[in-house]
Image (cartoon, rainbow, N blue to C red; front, side, top):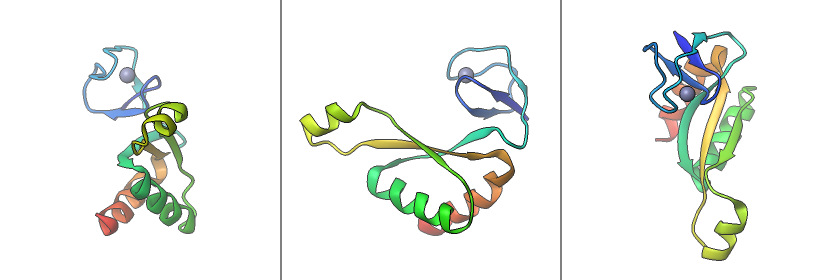
Amino acid sequence: MNYCEKCHMLLEEATCPECGGKRLRPVQEDDYCLLAEKEELWAGMLEELLTNEGISCVRVGMRGAALVVNCGASERYRMYVPYRELERAKDLLSLIR
Ligand SMILES: [Zn+2]
């Protein structure tokens, strides 16, 4: 598996479809990989589930917080977990889908 450091994407391909980057490297155990993109409610649930299982996760908002406050729209988050926990995290994710 290849890994794009810029997008935190796991890839089969030699080129990253997100950024067009060609300087991919083999994935390592500690690399954070994209698990899912969820709305705030789901992201919160998933984060709690992962934390309870001892999986560290990072969530990144897709829009600025100010925008969400102003528009009242719900924020979407991208959730990342370390590669070594990715399979376990996917199993957990399937439980709440
Ligand atoms: Zn990329």
